[in-house]
Amino acid sequence: MKVTVLGAGSSAGTPVIGCECSVCQTRLPKNVRTRASCHILDEATSIVIDTGPDFRSQALRENLKHLDAVLYTHPHADHLNGIDDLRAFCFRQKAAIPLYGNAFTIENIQTRFDYTLFPPTEHWERPVLTANSVDVPFDVNQTIVVPIPLLHGKWPILGYRIKNVAWLTDVSTIPETSFELLSGLDVLFLDCLRFKPHYTHLSLDEAVSLSQKIGAKQTYLIHMTHEIDAVAHANLLPEAVAFAFDGMQVTV
Image (cartoon, rainbow, N blue to C red):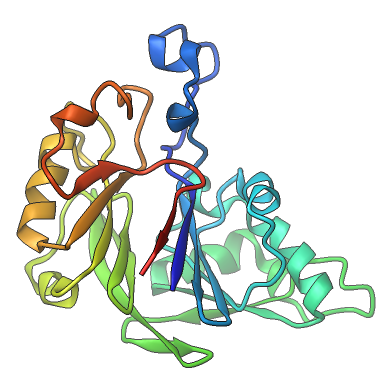
């Protein structure tokens, strides 16, 4: 199984528009971050987690040509508003693409992007998607996906585990009952917004602490603002914890 980090950035991306900080101005490759998303290829099964506003450029950069499913963590714009760019895959595949999320997220998609759930026309000029509310493990072409209940402030959201890899973005709290779903991980991708605490995200210290509690063999930090310098601050991280970056590929 191969995981590609499509984006490791927060809602504003890095560099931030108009910002003159050193991270935004120097634009080192590991500090150029689009909105958080990933692609998982499990043998022949192709899955994306979240489609933010950078999804089109991410898909072009990684030469994505086929999708079997999209998993949504929650309906904030930086994770959902690239949904219209799924139409290119529907057009190529001449098939509807299933979406998965919790009831809260699926209801949001049905309200805001209802046109994506209509039947196809002969032209396939729109995204053609099917919405599936999930709260228990399900399979995509025999790849088992385990939803992980999380809290993003007061919002109930989902992380996802596929085999021994988990993607947990936009986390402020991991319920105790979810930790058992995260045991025995090889790779954990974990939210890490900035240095200071935030009421809907993990800070750097909180992310490191949770990574040690979960105990994955390797943890990569994601959804970072421009406060995080992935090069200069790398020495602040303990062993087996590192900053993710756009385009990073991990084979499990």
